[in-house]
Image: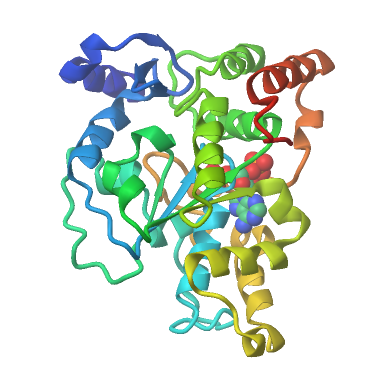
Length: 320
Ligand code: A3P
C-alpha cells in the first residue's frame, strides 16, 4: 500500500517531470531538486515553504541531515528556551509526555506537509522549527532575517549511515528491499534524502564560518563528549544564557538529564505512536552511541567512506 501511495504522489506532481531521478531508499525514487536528493512527498512541501514562510528575528531553526541527532537537538532547544516556564527537573515537564518532534515540528515533514499552508503568525516567540533542507534551499527569509538563528547538528557520516540503515529497515515501507551494501554505495554517491551529505554539511559549515552569530555548527560526537559544555554553548547562542545561579543550582544538568537518550528512550510516549510522517517513535531511539559503525560496516566499506570524506570534505576544515 505504501509503495502504491508513493507512486500516486509521484504521478500527481507536475514538478517531478522536469527533475532527474534515481532509485531511492525509502521511496521508489529520489528526485534531484535544487541540487539535493529529495523524496517526492517533501518536494511540494518545500516549494510551498520556500514561497510562503516568513521568518521572524526571534526564530530558531534547527537543521540536520536525517539521523544526525535531530531528536536530541529538538529536546535540548525546547528545554533551554522554555526553562522558565518548565523547570527541567519537574515531574510534569512536557518532554516526559510529548515526543520532541511534537514539541518542535519539522517545516517540511509536518507544518507544510500534505499541501498545508499553516498560519504560524500566532505562535509565541521564540518560534522553533526544524528542517532537513540544505542551507541554499532554505526560504530566503530564514537566510536573511537578522537575528533569526540557525543551529546545525552534524554527525560522522559512518554513524549517520548506520543509523539511517537501521531506521529505514525498522520502518520498512519499501516494496523492494535493498542490501546494506547497495544502500551504502548510494549513500557514498550522495543519493540519500537531502544529500549528498557533504554538500549538506558544507553549506552550513561555510555559513557558520562567515556568519557565526547566525549559524551555530555542532557535532553529535562533541555533544556526546561534553554535553554540559555544549548545552551552555547552545543556550548562549540562542540568546538564553545560563546565569551563574542557574548553573549553581543544577539547571544545566537538569536539562541534559531530561534530554538524555536513556531518559527519553524509556518514556511511554516515545515507545508508541508516530510523530514524524509514518515513522514509529520507538525507532527514533536505537543506541545513541558514537562509533557504532564498526559493528556494521566491513573494513572495505569504511575505507570507501574515508576516501569519500577526504575527497569531499578535505580542505574545508570540517573533520570527524
Ligand atoms: P543511533 O541510530 O546511532 O542510535 P535523529 O534524531 O536525527 O533521527 O537521529 C537519530 C539518532 O540519534 C539515533 O542514533 C538515535 O539513537 C540518536 N538519539 C536519539 N535521541 C538521542 C538523545 N537524546 N541523545 C543522544 N542520541 C540520541
